[in-house]
Amino acid sequence: MADTSFQPDVIVIGSGAAGLLCAIELSKSLQVCLLTKNCIRESNTKYAQGGIAAVMKLDDDYEQHIKDTLVAGDNLCALDAVKLLVHEAPARIRELINLGIEFDKDKDNLLQFTREGGHSSRRILHVGDLTGLAIEESLVNSVMTNSRIDVRENVLVKDLLVEQGYCCGVIFRSEQGQYLTLRAKAIVLATGGAGQLFSHTTNPSIATGDGVAMAHRIGANIVNMEFIQFHPTAFHKPPAPYFLISEAVRGEGGILVNHKGERFMKKYHRLKELAPRDIVARAIFQEMADEKKDSVFLDIAFKDAHYLQKRFPTIYNRCLEYGLDITNEPVPVSPAAHYFCGGVKTNIDGLTNIPGLYAIGEVACTGVHGANRLASNSLLESVVFAYRAAVHIDCWLRFGPGPRLSPENALNGPNTKTSPKTPIKTGMNKREIEKRITKIQQIMWEYAGIIRSHAGIQKALNALKRIEKQVAELSPDPLSVFEIEARNLITVAKLVLLAARRRTFNAGTHYNLDLVTHTSELADLDETDPFQLEDPSGEPSSLYRPVH
Ligand code: FAD
Ligand code: SIN
Image 1 (cartoon, rainbow, N blue to C red):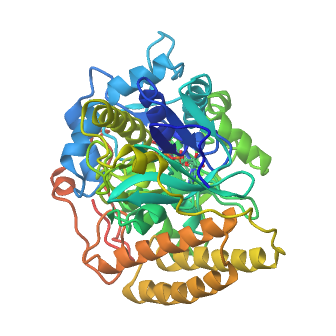
Image 2: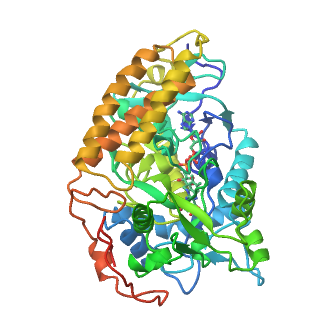
Image 3: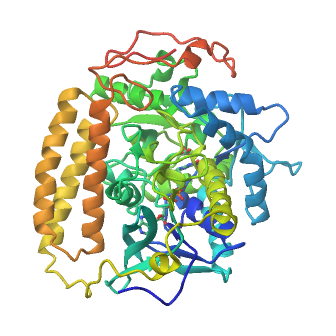
């Protein structure tokens, strides 16, 4: 059945920073329909803590931010995209401020900047440790009061429609469980990441990789899927859930210690706790393995209690909920899956290889992150490329050729799929599928996690093949939301494992014990220590070769 209640020019899928900002920009000249599978606020964006990077001070410069991004990305970044990211940051920050976001300021009313791993300067704007929430709230308020944006919540997009080679619509599952089609002249994927692929993650439950799976099904190019960033410090105190302890805690002086109380990071990198994330995550993993423990500690308790409560209210309160006072004691932490550096390949305007289909934010791979993302570059990527995609779509639709389909075909073509409401299932299948998904998450953590091997990757692929067959048998059409997400997770898991199997050298977040490690030329050349930290000391780790 076609949804004819509204005829948008553009459909935006997802309501994180990327989708919301793109919709706002598009609405200046076009009619937009924004579809989102949960309530509008639910997204990875909402949970972002550390902040958003931008060169906004006289003692910082674009070249340095570009260099830091390339070094963190192990020199596998797309340089043109990185330059745009960095140069366009101040303009996008100004826009966020105009939309009402109040970044923290100092006593002189000047913007305050924090530091995170891999940055050679304090250049992270933040709103306490609630930066994502502040951005999400402002953008949602703007979208909800915009008459040119039709928002549909609790609507899960299942597939993308392609006709005559153009992406011209979506098939979605309505809140009532019906499958409907909606057509438009351009489709923007802003569906975020896939942290739910792993048993340990900082991501909320919506992060199931739907966008990558859908785009893959219609032949979009998917790249860099082996590069999954593991955040070094997630709260680890079972049975409490994993949640993020921001890198900004280390940026403000927090230190990592093992169970013997040793500050171990100096063994691994000259920047110690503020080394790029992949290096810190592997170092923690190594320490945990050496000590046969499942966590290390992040200690910031030596700082003033009042300061900590004010600077990190989310972390302070969340830890307190689980019986831990960060102003008094070190926080047990371990790495967790955090961010997908790869995704749907796009050009610098968010356009994919399928005409009519754009991808922005975490679902996209613009190439800015290379093999490992620099901290706080992701919110920035979301807003910079959301804006660029909106401008490109506007030009393409209003002044350019637009879709080459006839208007009848593009907007009122035959429905490709209709279905009655999903029948209520017994719940038996759901439980069985849930068990399989939990298994996949465990397999991915073990074999496609921080340290990989050829044999492990192959073992995971074999297991996945069996589980995929079982899930297909357990979930005949029409599918529930849970089943769609489960199938998408399986597709994305396969893409990650196949990409990991193809990679012939280690870089950034991808570390395979059976491969040699590529060390970026830039990292080798980078001999200056921006923070005048002491030289690394100690023996090289046995699991991997640290980069000094
Ligand atoms: P998201 O914000 O994840 O939004 C995706 C949207 O798509 C959601 O609304 C979702 O419901 C919707 N969706 C998904 N699938 C479908 C579907 N099939 N149909 C309809 N809707 C769908 N980055 C930084 O730069 N700085 C930070 O400080 C920072 N901190 C972070 C802290 C945490 C805990 C996490 C998890 C991430 C953090 N990141 C940070 C990363 C950053 O938040 C994300 O990469 C970024 O917000 C992604 O934005 P997005 O708009 O692409 O996706
Ligand atoms: C954090 O606050 O540590 C997360 C920052 C990021 O993912 O960029």
